Length: 124
Image (cartoon, rainbow, N blue to C red):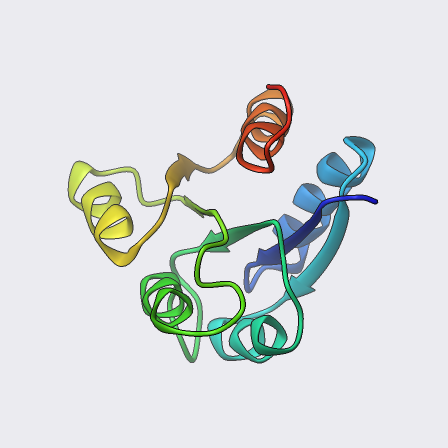
């Protein structure tokens, strides 16, 4: 069975980019365009990994990650924050919210696949 990954980003092009990389790596991919949409999906379905943008309308990535960590079936799911925000304070805030890793856009294909495999319990 393929590992399931949720890609949360308000930019359709970024979601498509991440989807294409992850599907080539044999992952099953679901998408959400903002934190609220993603929160609904995570209450209904279990994921092996989540890639979450920081800057999104309605609910930003930090708030989404905190919400997932509080309760629900994905409370323990690894979360990677992916953002154009590259400052140390941004990364610190991501880890404080509950992220397992923080990547800066654009993410190289090999780096994304290696991290996804590692966090899903496979070999990097």
